Image (tube, rainbow, N blue to C red; front, side, top):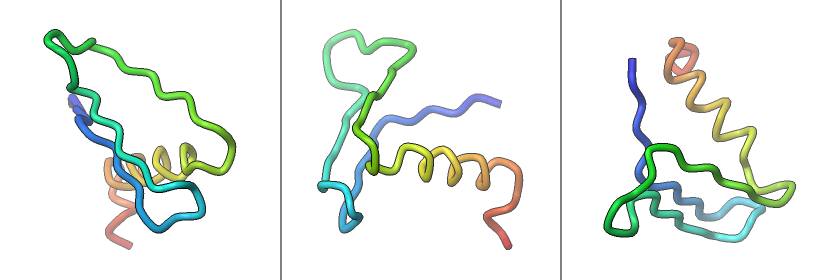
Length: 59
């Protein structure tokens, strides 16, 4: 299974609203790393992706 994330957007959370486009540029990288401060939903985003992949999101 291959997952491709092209855009990360947050609104209305305790972190500032933001939009990160991972496809910007002429030749986008095959791997993108995002570093953000504490409290900006990194762990929550990973948990949501994990739940969507293993079926827990249906519960």
